[in-house]
Amino acid sequence: MHAQPAYVHNPVSPVTDTRKVVVDIAGLNKYYSAFHVLKGIDLKVHEGERIVLCGPSGSGKSTLIRCINRLEIAEQGRILVNSTDLSQATREAAQVRSEIGMVFQHFNLFPHMSVLDNCILAPMSVRGLSRKKAVELAQHFLEKVGIAIQANKYPSQLSGGQQQRVAIARALCMEPKIMLFDEPTSALDPEMVSEVLDVMVKLAGSGMTMLCVTHEMGFARQVAERVLFLDGGMIIEDSPPEDFFNAPKSPRAKAFLAQIVH
Amino acid sequence: MSLAELQNMFLSPELLERYGPRFIDGLLVTTKLVAISFTLGAVLGLLIALGRLSGNRFLRSFTGAYVYFFRGSPLLAQLFLLYYGLGSFKGFWQDVGLWWFFRDAWFCTLLAFTLNTAAYQAEILRGSILSVAQGQREASKALNLSRWTTFRKIILPQSLLVAIGPLGNELILMIKASAIASLVTIYDLMGVTKMVFSRSFDFQVYLWAAVLYLVIVEIVRRSLKFIEGRLGRHLQ
Ligand SMILES: Nc1ncnc2c1ncn2[C@@H]1O[C@H](COP(=O)(O)OP(=O)(O)O)[C@@H](O)[C@H]1O
Ligand SMILES: [Mg+2]
Image 1 (cartoon, rainbow over the protein chains, first blue to last red):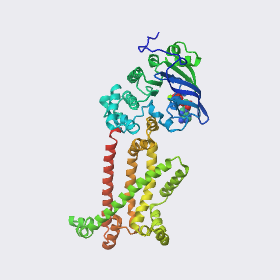
Image 2 (image 1 turned 180 degrees about the vertical axis):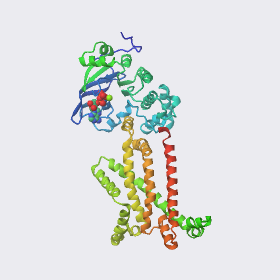
Image 3 (image 1 turned 30 degrees about the horizontal axis):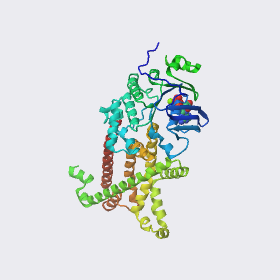
């Protein structure tokens, strides 16, 4: 049987959760021309909540979280982020990205800039911080992810795990309220997965609202309050990790779990 | 054959003394012509590249046609079209106050070269902008960088790194093609060479010209290699 998670959390039913709703998705439908990717997604994310999304490849996980920071625009439905309606092309909707950090599978660091410059660009250019303030902030977060001494290196001089930690620090430098992770460890060599997950666990402990697409089930057990299982563009299950892993309701989730647990 | 005879055949001191300064002048004219038109062509080329990539259909087809025309016809034809063709509408240019420009071979040559190299540079820049990974744009968006900041700080530096090799080739082609200017009375390196040959009837001056072109091209080639190495240090 599985060991008890080290991180103690308190799963609350999404219905009775009294925390503030920071992301409120209702009736979301998204198409890639004729292809119906997201089929009527309803999802409420509460402040400080940690959600893991999993599901087979192509089920729409990336598309769903990319809708939350408007990297994709859905054709139908409503997304409120901190009560800003993202379906309207307003100035507020455009600014919502400043409140949401995103970490990509392939890091997407800027290769021609040093680690430090990667981290200070957006705080200076978007938030209008002075260089001094931005550097302080960057050093603070690089410290947190354990990369402070590499601040003057270029991304290509770092390992994959280090690059992903820089990418997390870069996102945190915008001091976002919500962090999105899109398979942050699936492009990494196995020995580097844990250093990235450790950073994410620490971040979860600090109270950050997190939506993570990941198949790292150990991580899900340890930090997630809810696991969402997506299949064919729909949320098939939405339950605390114990329930999801020990007693998945749908046959598809069962099949999926059997596959990834090997 | 003695050494002195050999020297007289390829680098006659007498000829060198009489015409040497002219060759220096010609070299300067060629350098100026290429430097100005290549630089202006880079600015215009970048704008055309952006037009080619723009979401606006009119801009896209206009810049597409521009590139198609200037890359699809000979530079010589473009130069003659400008200098002799447009230059023949004296009355019109006088009316719009541009006659000073179109009657002057130097300005017409600069314009023709600029328009021509802009088309080539636009294609190089367009390709290099497209070569920047999509993830770079997504990361910029996710960080809420403005479109302008994204272009200036993320896309342009990375695409210039890709473009610098092909741009260097274009510069070298321009240096050699600039000899065409001599056909509209410009005393560039080739113009000077032709003039000196018509006076001295000594073929060695063409050898000088060839060597001088070679020297400029080699200097340019080495500088570019150096710059490329410096810029791309961290991307190895
Ligand atoms: N830009 C796009 N254009 C067309 N189809 C896309 C695009 N992006 C994703 N898709 C398709 O949408 C489906 C869901 O993609 P995605 O959200 O990336 O799934 P997941 O992250 O769960 O693997 C896939 O079938 C994929 O092929
Ligand atoms: Mg995905």
